[in-house]
Image 1 (cartoon, one colour):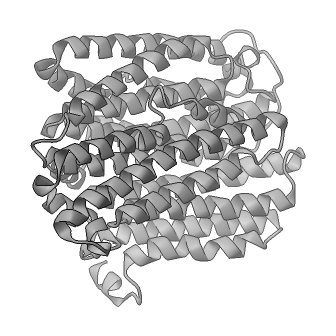
Image 2 (cartoon, rainbow, N blue to C red):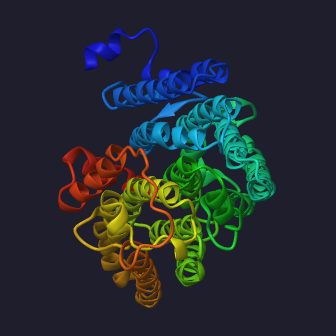
Length: 486
């Protein structure tokens, strides 16, 4: 593999960005659905191969791009979920075309924007320049906004507009925070591009003016926290999940929230290196707990299955944020593991939910009963996904939550009790909905649906393996990054 990487005309980090960029104009002009879906899968698969090559390629450090211990496995995770979602999307979007919800013109747009979204997220992950990182998240936001409104129904347009407004406000605040970081770093590093290089800012963190640095982080926290979906900045997320195509819901929950949290953690590392800066950990723990409790209670009031799991995503990003707020090697390890497991399991759940909604002809929970009788394979996949996401053993979410609770009790026992209460409340809500959807008398339609179950069960299998055994290479990465995060 190393020899193969060395023989490439371009380094893998360039391929991770270039492949989606080249796929966008090609997919934008292909009206044949099967060809477009196949090329979308091919481009996503090639991006995954390039991401895997990063594992054996030399580390990269430049003024604009960086490949280090922090982002390398997140790039691989993003590419993997992007590839599996493209495979799932081929059958899902094909059904939407058959029933007339989408037209060939919209499908060209969908596939092109899918690659734009994936490329932008990869750009944000490998950017060493804090301005370029912001650009990556902004482009990913705009691409997903357009995809949320793909059905062109009044509800979809409203959700896309709401996402655009709130996302733009958030990304605008993050932009102002980025400018403040540049101002404070340029006084130490000097002006120009080096003052925007994240690794140079980190090296000089102790020399930065703490008050201006703290003010910058407040804007960054609100701005990127909006993209993470933390309460009370979450209002765009449930609508975007409910009204957009289900593959986009899978990518939003499984990937885009992670990328925004990753950007926030990059800046947290800078403040951790400055003794005079504000206590970032306390703020993150507070926002994390608020998100967990709020989402757990809101789960009981949902009537739409996609909105239900949108609030579940808010809960789990709150758990990860709480873990990183506690800090330290073990809590950071738990946070990284939780981000990874949530990406795999939540995307798998949306894979199941999308086909369930197609089979029943509705997203209303009241009309989805008796799934075990009408669609047993979907029922099994959905049930396993819910069992995994609520944190029951032996899946990886249980491992990350158990590790977090164990270490949190030694640092913040009162806050940990509140966290456990939130987890139990959410568990009760989701198990209640599981029973309602899977068992009982069949309700609603029972149409046959051409479903690709491979992505669903591959994700669940990986989450199961992670709950039983973590590869040594992955453990080393978690330990290395956990030590960096402070």
